[in-house]
Image (cartoon, rainbow, N blue to C red; front, side, top):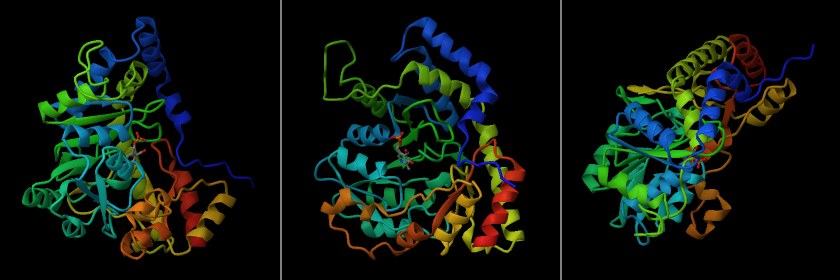
Length: 371
Ligand SMILES: Cc1ncc(COP(=O)(O)O)c(C=O)c1O
């Protein structure tokens, strides 16, 4: 029997579930005729600052810009080092370099795939100005140990929350632990628009003001440019769509968590060792942007799942240190053994709020047969 295809995420199913509200939001913006910087963006900033528990929020054109402009607004640039995880999406490193600073990588913890605070401490030098923990796959970093390191070495903390909006560490949502929290609204994210978008949430009014300058060519009023900035504004259509979706975010994240529980139950029942499954660390609330298992037989798994019409994704097949674009940093293979092993073994299975229990059971069956 031919089985139905199971995608990695299903944005069409999500759209169908909120179509009336999204369509009304789009019509509202088009009828108003104000498309870049306006009431929708202002409202989204207020709503997301409240959601993340921060005093301010500045909407930008992407999560990558949120990272780069946070660094620049904090005065971090040429000659400065920024410590971050070696296992992330490329944008984390790219933004540091775009700001003119140098990324210094540290290895990850094997359970959560997030920055190992001890490895990060070893990477700090006299030049280090900031640390960027990445809440990878939706799992929060150990913010207690990272904040302690930052205090001790006087470093700014910039959280990369691109994959983790709504995740909590000790009951507090990510984004407000350091100087800046960077969000991405890339369509596949837990809160995704219908195009690119990003935001910085912060408790620092000066930082928010600096970001507002930087995102709009360094000016507050037309044709007067106080500093060199760029064009990094969120458009009103995206803001209006995101405001609709924000109302569903907690429900969707709760659905992701239920799906993760069902995966774990089905996979362990079928004999997959617990070691291969994602594990929420104490004090953490994971929001499962990706549901990532690990297996030394990954290639076989991908083939078996693909043969049954089940999509998978390897995030990420290599560490940042091994990226060709970062060759000038001259990082040797073997320096990041935990991340290097993860890059060989991780595999993301389908995960989205609209996924059904039956689909999860079917996926688990194929995984268990091929692992
Ligand atoms: C961990 C991480 N950081 C940064 C980004 C960059 O965000 P954007 O695509 O919105 O520029 C992404 C996602 O794309 C990401 O996953």
